[in-house]
Amino acid sequence: MPHSRQRPSLAVILCGLLAAATSLAFASPAAAEVKAFPASFHAEQMPVSGGTQHVRVGGSGPAVLLLHGFGDTGDMWEPLAEILVKDHTVIIPDLRGMGLSSHPESGYEKVAQARDIAAILDQLRVRKVDLVTHDIGNMVGYALAAQYPDRVSKWVAMDAPLPGLGTWYAQLTNPKVWHFNFRGPDVERLVAGRERILLDRFYNDLSANPAAIDEQTRNHYAELYARAGAMHDAFSGQFAAFTQDGEDNKALFAKVGKLTLPLLAIGGDHSYGASMKSELDYVATNVQGAVITSSGHWIMEEQPQRAIDTIVPFIEKK
Image 1 (cartoon, rainbow, N blue to C red):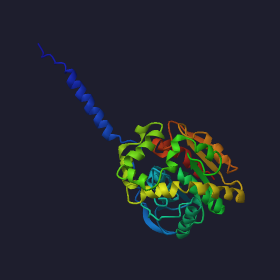
Image 2 (image 1 turned 30 degrees about the vertical axis):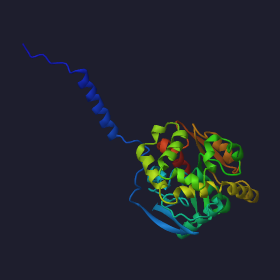
Image 3 (image 1 turned 90 degrees about the vertical axis):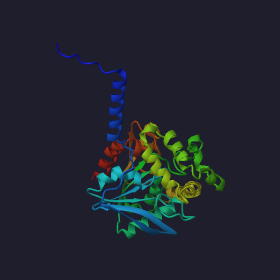
Image 4 (image 1 turned 135 degrees about the horizontal axis):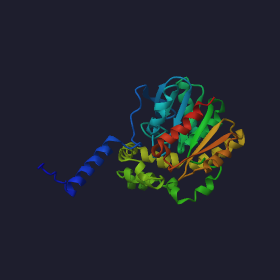
């Protein structure tokens, strides 16, 4: 008579399932992981007013300029840059006082930062760019397009309004933007050494699914924002300039009127959503709208492939 097979115990089955799940988790990292840029990119510190900006440049062909916002650095654009660099010159600065850029005490007004960006383009001998921006990058992007309309061919703006324009002043009553006035030496002492805790608040509260922004991503940006001067420049530089930015934008709008370039306004469906189009309709005449589903504010981290599938056809359209 053949030997009968013994059934495995429940504990053995559970251990096997756990091992399989663990193996799968390590084999399939989250999409939000911050990755190194392709080898075709190089980075350099480029001189700007009162300091330098860390700029990544790669590829050849029509130029695309990518501008990040708070909570990120230029690293956020790697998934998109990997696609665009195949047939474009891709330019990715860390904004003033952020990432690996230097930390000057002044010059954070967005019109001033746009002049610095124009100077960077001059140094690279790039006359005209397509523009892709997010968050504070939108604000610098508007200042660039309004001051240098002949240098921006088209613009993709993602999930943030413009100081002084559209519904900006109404949105200042939203408790989610309390951090706009969160600054001063005592505030910086409170945050020092706790940068990850502060950033987690933004990643968790402003996302559709906090788990989409993985530990590696959170730690990566926490290390960059823990660099000497980084939080000071965010609080007392980028945020503190918003009041002046509003006045500057109103003056720019009165001077140049609505932008006429093709503009794609993208919002996450758990954040600005379709209202991004109406925000940009205020300042431009040729605005398309798009909504990224299952995403909050952190579109490139939460839904990178959906963002790429939306942005790249707009950039490549003749």
